[in-house]
Image 1 (cartoon, rainbow, N blue to C red):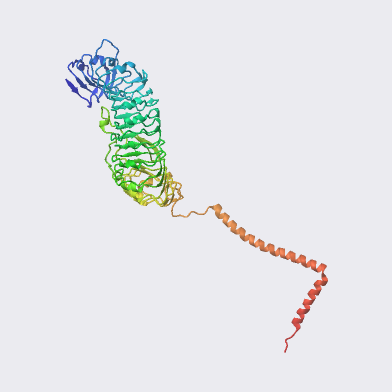
Image 2: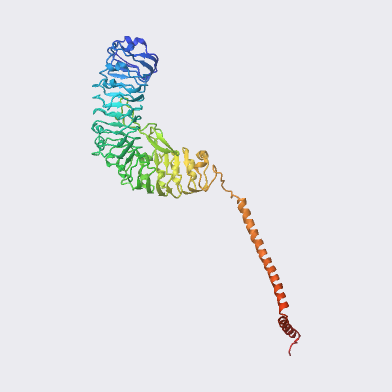
Length: 578
């Protein structure tokens, strides 16, 4: 007998009459709104044929009492996710045929008991202990004994200590978002079947074992972000085509990007490390690469021209911010980034790995990233497929903004701030009708802000501050919502929201005008004073000289003056000659 009433709108408590269905083999009540307490031993004691039980995602409180005389059915599938359960159920100690066990999203506290590691040692394939309050393991070293286990997730707990070593059979291993410490054991190099490895958001450190390159060929998902790993990225033995999602961001990894990572990458995030390299143009051959994040590293040099017109055909997000790239903006790359030229505005899907790389519930390994948007670093736990972004900020790019950037009509975010860009703001920006964030601040741009930008009705954030722009600020639509900070430190700009108005010459400051008048007046007064002083001095000097001459040399004076007088008289009295 089978009963599957999952994912309905059932509410209330589970009827006790279920305990009389002695022939039932499968009972799925998950994804409903069932409530109340559930005495596990009492409810299922008589159901000896019950093999598959699913109670997940209800609001049930499961009660399990220690009773050695109670023998429950031998379950193969037991899903108790999100049920209120504060400790590991006692009845699990007698379960030796479990294949799928889900105790996630409960309230399990403390250490994982040693007895739990013996539950269904030879049969268990899937174990999910996500999102509890588990603190550690009651045995060291932690070597998991489930010989057939292929999917293990203990993520989102508060586990401390070293990494549990999974069995060689493991395919998907997730211990993310814990407090695990220590190094990655070389035992992980023997996991030849592993497809998804997630050690992200812990406190792991040390140098990654170079032998990890041996399993890269089998991996499709590799998440090591937000740890303390340093040294070089392991080099794979051969190039494969399985590794699709790589996130090594927020570590202290050094060296160069190994060429062996060029497989079938769709998502490559190496941001916030210490990688010293030039732009990896060889990644352009990855025909499925959609997201490339290299920000906050030590990349340098100019971005070379694409080697082919078909490079980066699927690229939708690129972040090269906070590096030391030089030269001009990569205009020829803008010409061939075809996936950015279209906008799937109606798509609300999120990017993630294929469901073949995920756990039993087919939950995608969603891509995540940190990118600067609207002037703030934002963590994207999931990335919508419609999101198209270019962040080239905080580098040493120079020259003008190429017109070709206007062809990337799918852009939602464009950040070119904190470079050495010159010239005018390209009028081709008017074609970016999906643009929501535009940051051109901290450059040397000149000229006017194109009036066409006022037609970008989706533009929520604009920053052109700290440039050399002139003229009036456009107004209308989105431009009426921007604040003063969007335009500050452009001495030639005027108009709202700035206090400087356009078309009116400002009167000279009173202090300066008064100073000029006083200066002119002073010069005028000084000129007349000099003249008067000259006359006065001349008069005084003349009187003194005359007095001295007359008093001390009268003979000379009279003789000289008399002769002159006689001569003058003779001249005056002499008549005309005939």
